[in-house]
Amino acid sequence: MNGLNTKEMEDRYELPVYPRRDIVLVRGKGARLYDDRGREYIDCASNVGVSNIGHAREEVARAIHEQYLTLGNCYGMFYNPVRAKLAEKLTSLSPPGLKRVFFCNSGTEAIEGAIKFARASTGKTEVIAAMRGFHGKTFGALAATWGDEYQKPFAPMMPGLKHAPFNNFEKLTEAVSQQTAAVLLEPVQGEGGVRVGDKSYFRQVRSLCNERGILLILDEVQTGFGRTGTLFACEQFVEPDMLCVAKSLAGGIPMGAVLCSAAVHVPVKSHTSTFGGNPLACAAALASLEIIVRERLPEMAKTLGEYFLKELGAIKSNRIREVRGLGLMIGIELKEKAGPYVQRLMEEGVIVLLAGATVVRLLPPLVITREEIDQVLSIMREVLA
Ligand SMILES: *Cc1c(COP(=O)(O)O)cnc(C)c1O
Image 1: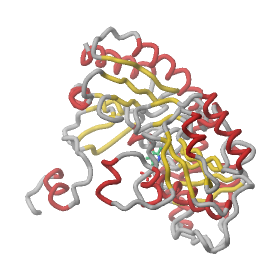
Image 2: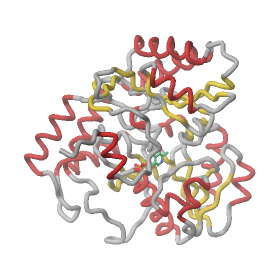
Image 3: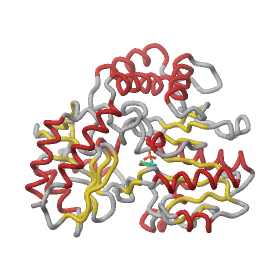
């Protein structure tokens, strides 16, 4: 033993890239998390939208266990029945025009893939993303992600990425050129402050893309798998040419995917991934999707989200500027810095997220109960009073 506790070890032996909170989480169940002192928290973060089905689900645990003992890895050059089944399942659950899938291992990889597929499919080079958008931190995705905080230390950025203000169709039109291969948007901006897209804006963008031969890529890494009240948020907006998913796709096991329309063509061998579509992640995803459908989690997110949003909106506090959201993706914009409130809420047993300096973001597991939401509300009323 080195005599160090968990925090000391992580601080000493890892690169300090995460802004840390001062607790050690060791266990989870449903919408609850527990620290190393046995203290219980209500999870309103879901690891930034990973744990939609809740923590420690038996069905997923069993699927992973059995799959690992059967065949844990299978490179994409070989066919595999679990991967086949998931590809069929995902394409059948997603909008009708999305007929094929590319499997990868994370959100940023799904975006990398989509940007590369857009270039390969159109022969054009530029992608327009939105200001305040977040798409990941590898070089292609990073160029699409908004903000000096993320980009500046790693300059220069990959060329070809432009930004236009979100929900502003005129400005987007101005950014389009002969070289525009794709427009890349989140239906609800997560990191950017829980900003819900305008449906009319998305319809206009869809028509523009059709007219100009531009591919529309929707980043549903955070909004996917029931979060906003439908399995994919795009069902409430428009159908994309590429749909990027990850986070809660495989019930907490790393996995990403790009669902693609017939407009997407990629030469064989040009873009692959060693772990992409590995049977372990595929088995976890199948078990997780089964839960999402059987327990009607998108519907739960819709009704519980409406209730949560209404009750939060009714809190009388002159610290709150606005409460907004879609389904169980909720932002509370304050008139001051939100960091201290995130800390206070944690001390009171509720784990929430920041989204920019002034927004408290709530992304609870979709299995959260109304009683748990009421508990969160009563703590919120106290902390925000
Ligand atoms: C988290 C996130 C990503 C990046 O996913 P990683 O798995 O962390 O690479 C991309 N887009 C959105 C909208 C996200 O929320």
